[in-house]
Picture (cartoon, rainbow, N blue to C red):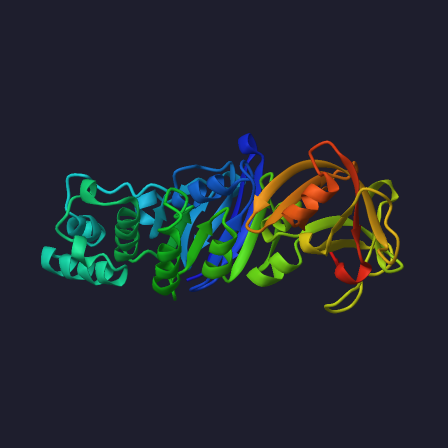
Length: 356
């Protein structure tokens, strides 16, 4: 199975072109309003773009270019959409919910029930076969919904924040189960969760204001982000600009010195990014002595407890929200609070520079 989609929708300022390979699992990330739901709705057939074309193998899902009006109805696309809510049929048993897809395709009741039990076993929910949805917990219902989606044997499975409505104690178990049952299934996963992207996808697509902002193998995108959204998701500070003599020069002549650790260095004058971890940042109330080459005058914006550390976010007055991780003892000793002006210092050796 291979998917190719190109779609434009002016009302939502959406203009996207994507591909999903056979058996590939792709995570779609982006801030609220970036176009993630629009993308899923267009693929599922519940939203019609102004123009574009999409094919799934040899099947044309839609072709709206040059006055053409080909539009395949949702039920005929071979695509299953699993939303945050399980949306099980309340009047049917769990077994009959999962058997619904095969039955619609004309499979006999006995064969459909056997197929449904296979998928209930796959998602560790066979014991709920005779229950009604109202008798299930949120995590149990979501497992049944996944079984129902897979029992329909979709050519493409769309998952829209499948863990978002679940208790934090349930999500890790469901994530492990998905990692197992999705092997070999072409899947597009919309998520805000870094763990979902890391554990359930081979490739990431980042949407920003209705456009593809970056795309690539999951670990590569998260280690070398191109957008602030992806950097924040990955827990990194990101400064974009142009490369010059071992540094990234951003707006207002803000310079960040660092090292290129992967591949060739950017060409002088070409777009480049500098990233560094919050743990590499030291906070000073007076200009620091010693070796830190990178110094940022910032105003503290937020202090957030993070395990045995405190994450300190600050505005550098150049459009960057930079973060530092320090101990509670440091917060008390330095008397850190929102609104205080301090200096962030980062050694050049802790900064990675790469081309954009």
